[in-house]
Length: 541
Image 1 (cartoon, rainbow, N blue to C red):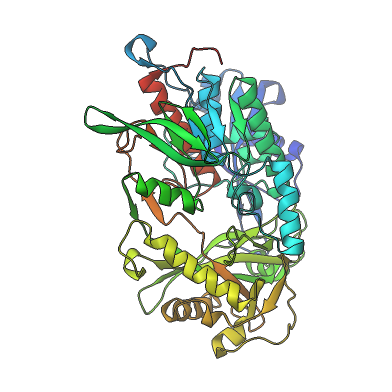
Image 2: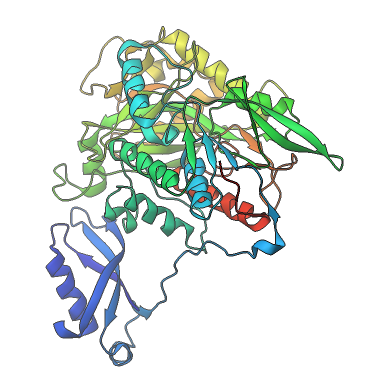
């Protein structure tokens, strides 16, 4: 297969014009072209407002050898072999046989993709999810945003699809992938209802509205393969037995009453299952506190970001512009943007009574008036008051309680100019908030520690030198952004197993992923590890 890189096109080009460009670059006639496919597409705005789309394409032609000889001096034209993911095959006769179904705790990306692969290859997994199915969950969350009534079992954090269901649905990842898992994840998402463009866009996203359909599609596929998904089924305890001097899982307890025997448990619990973390600590599961980041959400008009990135406010055929910003504060803290949501909303993402956290969300169209992003500051275990594996959870809770009190149960909101002055805001100016959930004015400097506030203020001012007006006085801050990643790492060995035999930590909650795609890929890796050790589940249910 021939790969052509660096094909630059106008944003409003047609498919026919791109094909004509391919013919020209390869110096071939139409009848010599068998098939072509976009491999990657990105935006080049270095000469704004002359913005270009930059393509990499795969092409099949008649008489490939002679075509390549004709263009042998073109550095952007090469022969490639497309890598397709293959679930590894292991001889069943060399493995233990499962007599009980693998149990997966959590139906976020890690749990769903682990479950999908185990189901496809005959393991008939049982997925236990504390929250509701995605349709019921969507209704519950809408009621919470309207009335402020938090359901601790089903909310923005918990339920089918995990925390990512109510997000921007970003699918880009920094994971070094040599096995094709990344592309396989994208292909599965497309088969479940995601747009085909995610297969090649440099920064693919789905949007919360499409994600809700996609996760349901994956669940139905798991069930079609023989797996099972149960909602409102919280794992409240693990039963352990002694095996040759080591603890081994023997059963899970659901909703404090139902006992389900098992040999393998996949912990795809997400970063907010705090009660589960405490239960696991009591079971002496090996874990430790880890660094993460906390801060606020910031809102600007989307047109301002479009102009800064594209050199134009009316972007026409271009997608809503995003940004990625980093800064090293004078106090040594890293300050950076995270989970940037073009044309999105700031949402109340709380999951516990008396505590308040925010997150960002957007729909597939990204057509909201404002752009928002988390601006967060690094924290490490040295910042936590306690010396325990779960000290980061206590740190998060302290901030969320302060945010809840500052906003009187509503999202605390402040203009950046007032944040600098250390005073509560009284009114809006040119920017009005795009929020899901009620809000009120507050002073966020009374919510976050001084070192975090100092770094935030310094970082936002510095970002104003990169994006004009980023530090405008009427930019809106809301808090607190505390769930950026798991505050805990659950340790596992090279076989993906914890110190408790049969327990497999997985995904973002266990500290091995940082988003939808990386969590899904980690779920696949755990499925591979189980398939390497165990033969498929055979007994009828």
